[in-house]
Image (cartoon, rainbow, N blue to C red; front, side, top):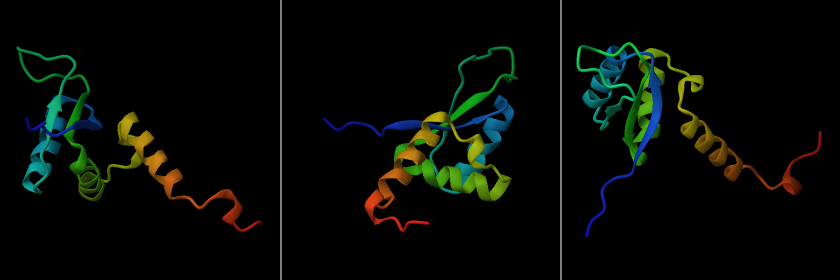
Length: 102
């Protein structure tokens, strides 16, 4: 049995229309993207923030594309992505005994 891709929330858009535009931009760049709306609306577009999801292996590229194209900064990344970045930075940091003293 083959398991599917692991999807992660990588950024939150201010509303559904903005989220749809960002996903369209990402799809045009070859990144798989979908919205995860916590307040689905059957009347029309939601004015509430919506989360964008991508397969985990594409999430960094998605953030990079949004950062380059719409000046989206690290402060816009989801909490999970910020935590992952902190772990990556700390994992790549040299051991404390290899750091030059000031």
